[in-house]
Amino acid sequence: MIKKIFIFISVFFYLSSHLFSDETISRSNNYTYGQSEAKDGSKIITRGSGGKILKSKIKTDIEIFKKNLIKRTKAKNYSKLLGASATNISKRIKTRGGGGPIYSRYAKTVVYIGNYEGKNVGSGFLIEKPGIILTNWHVVQKADEVAVWILPDEGVPTEKKIYEDLEPLYGAVVATNKKEDLALVKVGNFPDIIKKVTIGSIKEVRVGDKVFAIGHPEGLPWTFSEGIINQIRKKKDWTYPDSQYQHTATVIQTQTPINPGNSGGPLFSENGNLVGVNTLKGPGENINFAVSVEHAINFLKKNPNLKNINPAEIVMKKDYPNAKTQDFNKNAIIDTWYLDPNKNGKYEKALVDDDEDGFIEAILYDENENGIWELQLIDDDLDGKANRAFIDENEDKKIDLIAYDYDQDGKWDEYKEVS
Image (tube, rainbow, N blue to C red; front, side, top):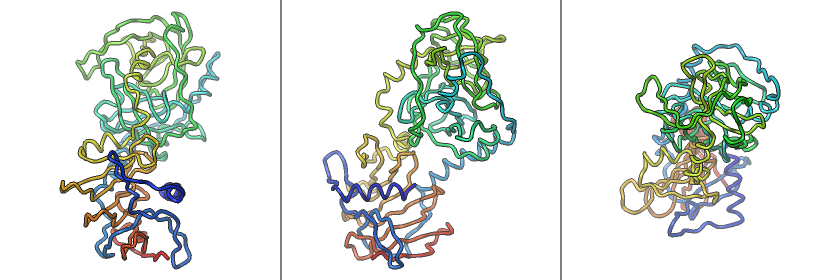
């Protein structure tokens, strides 16, 4: 992942320069990008240079990187907890009537959400690109970040396989509408090939029409179901068993089966357009409700800049409220945060998320505050420890050494000289 990003940046900076401005701080002003030849003949991808630093004092166990590990560990621990009681039985998808094409078109659009803070699961779906997922507020309640699983190319997995074998993506809860029980999650590296839903209107459906749902009820991932609209109820109030908060929204009452795990999934019309967000089960059999798509449309309109948010921003603002930010690759998404820990007006550290997936994969250092980055540490596998370090020993703004920690024991195992 990092290697691919470095090659891209190398080509970019070979063709153009990156200058300071009043609004941003160029993290490249004292960096040489490109491919360098190691003395053993291997190619080294270099990103930074400048500053003298002793080999023996470079640490690989970095506090900021540990947050990568903490995030991944929380999701893995929750997955283990869920996996212990998960079924290993896969459900055959049944698509009756005219619903088959809807499932075929939108199955990958629907995601499985694991809320490892609130200890619950639910559904969601891609409503806008890039990577903007709509779900219910109660699915992501108490969480700043959630795990997001997409449907594998090889087909529908069992719930147990999801938790034990599939690596989730990570999304930040970027907007909530508690009153109407809606929330938006931004996933930074959501596959661009996946289609977003086609947004319809409640005006295109009426009582008696067929509707279709995709979700994950009762541990049966990517289940497709159909039903009919029983009624459209304006300004319906409801509460959940563990809360006194009263939600209010226009809802579509359907016979489409909705069970725990379906919450946050899409409700489609016969034309395959999104008309609602499956939300709650009523007090009796075959009484289920979906929040009207009109609420989702208004929710999106009130949050027009979500496509430009890096999933890391929510947490970074809490942890580093005074950080200076930069959109380094000029795609309108923040990917770099500059820190001034001693508050002397000089930025001595930069945190980098080049692939904008919500994980900090590189840290730049200017410990002597001379305007030159002295060191870059990289956490390739996001395990909380640096795998590599780029070092410039003679301060000529070119990489002299690449340090490697192969066994992840916190000590550098090898240094490669760069010619």
